[in-house]
Length: 583
Image (cartoon, rainbow, N blue to C red; front, side, top):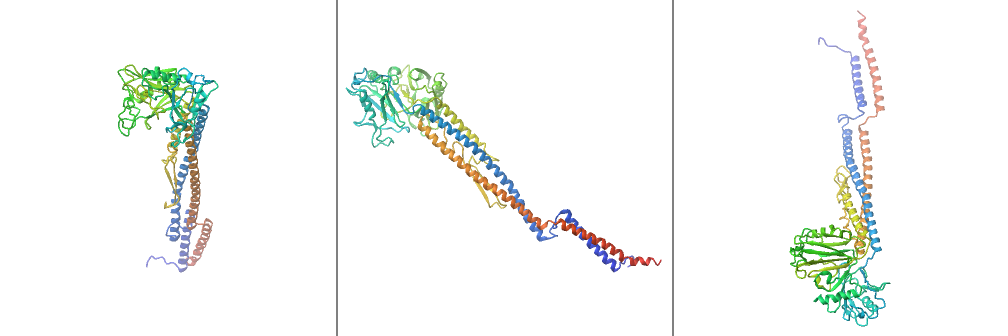
């Protein structure tokens, strides 16, 4: 064909060799530039897809490492919370211990001491006011409110003062009182009161085993509740003769109301009322319930308080039989209103504080000063105290007899256990710690997961999420730890608080151990996953990554071959060049 360039066989062979060499050089240069000996399925399908599989798994595990790292931070946040929570619980434990010391330094028993010197009295009936028919009756309950049955060797009943009885014989009769055999009380068959003379000759009566007791002075021995003014007077005289006139309820102090003189001695520094209900069945009174709407029983029709707005009703609170405060109320006064009247009174707030818990329906009056020894709560009405007005808080002990004072124009008189005034502050401090426990727990979350609030943390360890560790949280709030607001008014309630705080501390420490175990496992799996990712990447590289030294040597050899090919091509063309010499 005209114009076609005809190459000799030698030239064509050398040219093809150079082309192949250049192709190999291009391939090696690509390998050196990418670092991969297999960069696509065209290079080596088997190695390429095997490498991709390893890389995909490595990528998935790398993504999981982020989740594992966040799980570690979540557990660390919870662990930091547990550390701080442990400190708070220990602080609460220290407060409870201080409260126990404080109440132990004071009197933790229900105890009352008379003021009359009875030392050497060989016949009590010769003491003015005692008489020959006097009876002292005791009404006794334990800390749970369970009524005991006082019994003497001569049977159940009061302590009669017979002609010829010396003070030692009266003491012996009181000490002979036991809880009747067969009762359900833990004091079954045991002595329940201890009577003795102090060094000053005063009669002291103490309840044993944390009991509380009421004393009823019945001068005529008929157990009637103030049927006449004369009886009320002689009952008061009997109390005074034995040295308890200053703290016993008396006719003169309660206007025209008639009742048997007596008082209640409690082992507590806090008076807790009976339950306040409304007329609706199953409904406890709220703080905003009117006093006139409070009922004695669930859904009952009998009002616990009756206030005569026309006549003007006053609640009389007497502290230590000297400080008397009259708190005026009317038919619009609520439970909270009465609480505020007590707590805001400039005189009373140095001695007592009142409160109402709508959950339990209990009204409380608590001593906040070690100087508060007796509290008398009564009611007077200028128009009709005996028949219209009523104030029945149901404080204290009224199991076996009910004086008329509890049904009309009532008065309730108590001798409190003495204790350090710091008990009230300890209660406040303890409740503050509980509040901070709750706020700390609520702040211990990390990215929406709060192990101290009871949430569960799932940590996944493999790419198909078939392998995981579930770290189960625990509710470590005050309610979750079964810690309730402080009541340090009695030794048994302080002991109960100590038991709860010990259990709470064990719970927190136990949960801290669980977190440590989970954290150790997660960190171990994190290290393993990192190692596995490195292994997968290394395996993938072995299938696709080129040996730079080897490929460099190949390039040098190919370049040498290329140069030799060019020389060979030049030699092959010399035969044609020799033809030019003919011209």
